[in-house]
Length: 125
Image 1 (cartoon, rainbow, N blue to C red):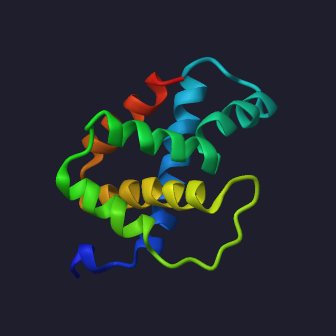
Image 2: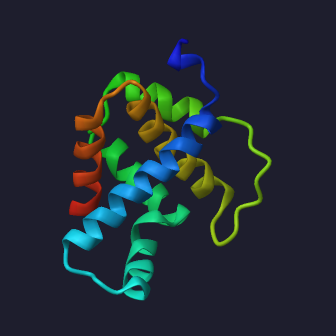
């Protein structure tokens, strides 16, 4: 199977779960040990608005390579029938693009790159 042919929204579906797992582990490793506190703090990383912000920072800083930018663009432009809540459609599409990138990297087995992206993201807070 050619991973580049997988629907961007499918990549985002996978990437959403992976991204959230990394963020949860990061928060737990930073000493947050109450579920309510974990949930509140995770919103600063996993909301569509914040994911859009992080993607913008990744792009502006030239952190992503050309292949990753292609994945982001393809996912950002994918047709979605979702009605985002609490964010604009542009923020929603950017969040989807970040998640698709994470999903893509997972499928190609580039865990080190996922960790580099996560480390960049958590350094922004």
